[in-house]
Length: 214
Ligand SMILES: [Cu+2]
Image (cartoon, rainbow, N blue to C red; front, top):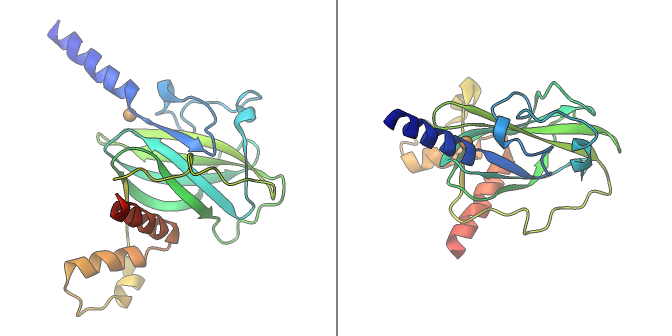
């Protein structure tokens, strides 16, 4: 009896956790099957295509709502109307901390990715949670010059949420480091500043401002 109660408790916490993608609006509710690669078990079809969002040609906002205290987070993209290869990194991996709404106001496209008006793509958000479970969500987009930025009610960063880049600086960047710099705090800030994805720095800056205001 005790065992079954514990099992029920675990099951309930798994179902109530997970995350949603609020902008671009996700392909569909994936909560029951969110661990299924590549899009949380939500298969693209005519109905889910109604959730496709117009997104700027040079990149746009991405917002999601995690419910785990922390999760390693990856944001990728695949090109095409029904992309199965989601192998373009949009945001360098980071550790999401605390809960609420996360928003990257402007995720730019990597060099060489130059979509044309009307091209379609899928954005994939992956979260690796506390126990190692991988959770997936997709949001389908159409690149368009008519895309409108989400409202501040949709794209914002909740008080207390954070994003710490998962850095691997690599040999080249270690060479660039100042060897005389022994201060831990300085090391931390330089790790953020050398991260190739400035979006995260921008986000951290925004969060710092939000923290000062709170
Ligand atoms: Cu969960």
